[in-house]
Each structure stands twice: as C-alpha cells, then as structure tokens.
Image (cartoon, rainbow, N blue to C red):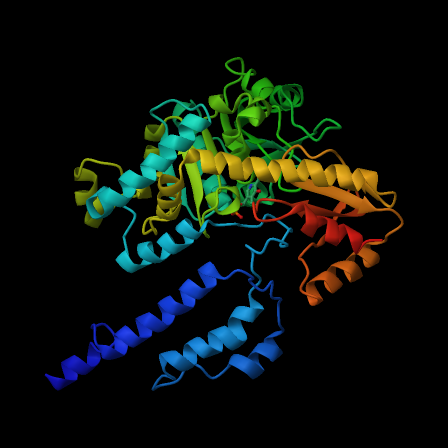
Length: 458
Ligand SMILES: *Cc1c(COP(=O)(O)O)cnc(C)c1O
C-alpha cells in the first residue's frame, strides 16, 4: 500500500504538487503579464553547461530549484519572439488571452485527434477554421485541421493533391510528379518535394517578384500532366509579395492542377478589407495554409490547413488500423484525418478563445496597424539619405539597405543591436547584395522603436 502511494506521488493532488503547480503558474503569470520582457540572446553550450547542467538526477533537484535554473539560466537563453523589437524572420505576437488559454489547453490534456475524444475541442477549432474559410472566400464545406506549422501544412496539402491526381490518372503508377511554384516560394516546399520524392519547378517571377499565370502556363505547356499542383505564395516570407493568384487560377480548367495557396505569413492580411484586392483568386484554392502563430496572434505552434473539399483530403490522410476503427464509426470530424499526424494537441483552441473573447474587429485592427506601420517606416527609410528601400512593402515586411555597407558591416551592426539588447534585426541578402529587413507582425511595435533602430545605421 505504502509503495503504491509513493509511486503515485507525482500524480496526486497534495500539498507538494499544489506547491509545484503554484510555482509554475506564478511564473507563467509573470511572463504573460510582464510589461518589459527581455529580448534575450543565445548562449554557447559551454556557457549553459556551466550554469544549467546537472539537473537530471536519480532523486530530483526539486521544483523550486528546477524552476530557478529555468529562470536564471535557461529562459535568458531563449529569445523573446514576442518582443516588439524582434523584427527578424517572421516573429510571433500572441495575445494575452491566447497565451493564457494555452495553459488551459495543457491543463485539460486534450487528445485533439478524434471527435470521440475531443468533440468539444474539434467543434471550437472548426468554428475558427470556418471563420477563416469565409474570410478567404472558400465555400461553406471547406474544412481541415490545425497542424504544427506551415511546413507540415504545405506537405499535407501537397500529399492530398498528389493523391487526388493519382485517383484521376489513368497511369497512376507513373513515376514522375511535379509541383510548380516560384523562386520566391518558401523553403518548406523544396522540403515537401524531397519528402514526397517529386520534382519541383521554380517558375520565374516578374520584376515585381510575383508569379503570374503566364509564367505558370509556360511550365504547364512544357510538362503537361506531370504537374499535379501549383503552389502560389500569398505573402512571401522575405518580402511579403503576393502572387497573382487569380491569373494562375484562370489557367483551369484548360489545365488540370490542384491550386494550393501558401499564406503562412501573409494571408492574415486578407482580414483587412482594404487589402483584400491583393488576394484575388485565393477563393479558388483547393487548399491553403495560414499560421496563427505568425500573424494571427496565437502562441506556437499552429498552422490552419484548409481544404476546399475535405473529403478528398480525408481519403489521402485518414490512418487505417484496427485499433482506430471505432473512431471511424463515430460520426463527427476527426482532425487527425486531414494531415500527416494522429495524436495532436488541440492547438487551435488558444486562437479560438482569443478570437471569441475579443472579436474579429480587434484582429482586423491589429493586422491593419502592422500594415500601416510598415508603410510609415518605409516612407521614413526613403526620406533618409543613407537608406533605401529594396522595394515598396506590399504587406508588413520592409526590406532596405544602408548605402555603402558590406555584408560584414551589417553583421557587426546586427550583433551589436542584439548584444545591447536593443533589437533582433538580422542581415539578409537580395540578388547577392546585403540588405536587412523589418518583419512587423506585433501590434505593440512602435514607429519610435523602429526609428531608433534606423538611427543606429547613420
Ligand atoms: C513561415 C512560412 C512557412 C513555414 O511555416 P512554419 O510554421 O515555420 O513551418 C511556409 N510558408 C511561408 C510563406 C512562410 O512564411
């Protein structure tokens, strides 16, 4: 009896576990509500070994000590992606409501794969997916699932696309399948092609960086029905460029292909009425992806993957196993059936809670604010004699150069900004020339903060 009690010690509610839970929740509360979060910076493995090794022992070091190691040594070596001056790659900027609710999702330990186990969670996730589908102009039958990120979303969509093409093909055993996208498309598409063992053709973009129907048509004429999918990018990661989706969609039905829209970063801008025009054609997509962990204010990790016809995706993705049969017999929506996953976190719920709490208008306003700030800082860059825009920002990524600077100059400057804990703005390059960029998805980022960064480039 005593032995049994001892072995369940970690799992039972007691004075001890209550103390642990309080410690952790207090810590989390402090981080979520902190007014000035530190930017932080990477440390070397040697530095971390000095300050944080030896935590895994036979008898445990105790929750207080473990949390102290995290607060003292580990957390400072994790960059705050939600810091207003984190402006590199694509940042994240979760709302307080979304982050807090992520804790509630963890507390309930929801198995988000099936309707049998999580009908309530799947229902709420589907409410968010239906909202997004409507915003993007997809039909009411559209549906899908939240997956871990745009990479897995793109891969899952392309697997569904190839499966649909195989079902239609008279020679499905044919060896070569081909995806078309532009050279500006995200690296995850090259990864997807590699994983799927399919060819990928990078169609040329115009001087404006956009993929057009004309360029895609040339590839289609060359490769014919080898091409099973065309991927358009709705907001390229480097520049925020939105492909001319409508002109590509118009190539159908003369050419038969699955149209996927990779909107991991940029599709969020469709929530802003004045910018919808830029996205014409998205409503004709067979599948699309948008990452709430980028510009829809959810914590990591969440990509909304939507299919125009979810039944077709289901037949590509539903896993078949005797132990799962009972799930298929339960009527309802199994999120696991729509992507390459089975066990999954109900990762759409933080966005559901925040969107339900604050309403869509708050989201539209927050996205519009980022778009407005990008235009303002672009004008400021243009007005400065030593700085110039590489191109006018289409969304909220601003790419610019400092005249006379070499790649080494950018590197020194960028390292300094991070060392001084002012900002994370990393060097980038465009057509072989060094540049830098601001990616603005955080509504708390201010013009003054960005101007202060520009001032360090004099
Ligand atoms: C970020 C991004 C991806 C990859 O998304 P992850 O969530 O990082 O996997 C794919 N496509 C585009 C356009 C992106 O910006």
